[in-house]
Image 1 (spheres, one colour):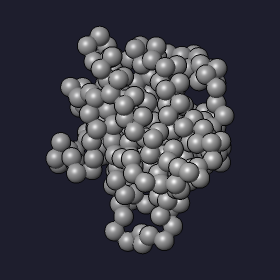
Image 2 (image 1 turned 45 degrees about the vertical axis):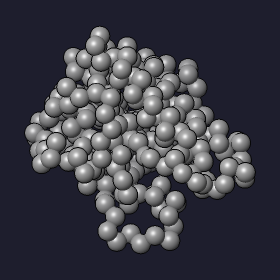
Image 3 (image 1 turned 90 degrees about the vertical axis):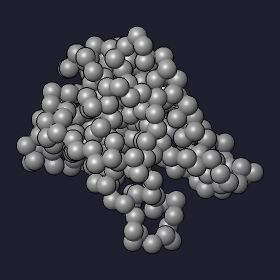
Length: 245
């Protein structure tokens, strides 16, 4: 994938749902997808942030996006089914799903980790992607060339607690989904570990870190365009990093 260059119309006529679309990598991905021709569904919990992304896409001349406010922390299976029903009514299919939303929780020893906080982090980072994917599978199967992409992060080390466990589980979920859909559907599921990127989540994890030298959100978009577009038709069950591009 070295030197991969996405075509300007790579995502033409595709319908792609992006979680955590209000800022950071989600915002950059949503605007890039629209710039390459996709109709983007912007899912997030903060309406004014989603509206800002909506306005940015419209001002750039991209296809008219859609906003779907949802707080993943408190979302139930019914909420995801309602979302899927709405997408079915409005679009009839889903060509792409980017699981980008995440919450950090706290960095601390397991001895001190609050069980309620653990549950909230697992809900946003692992349970919600499962329920959303399950609800959207019928819509993905209606598409000719559907994609599911997961933002991964290898943090299985001391003090990363629920975040590290959830991200490891999310990658395992990606592999299971890819294995189950590889031979009997056109669905392709892959992961992308963006590495150190200047985002609000990174700032909370490393508040004293110098931001000099960190990648910007625009630096991680090319791999996501590959994973959500037709050029990844022969790839599933893989996890990529920026070095692969």
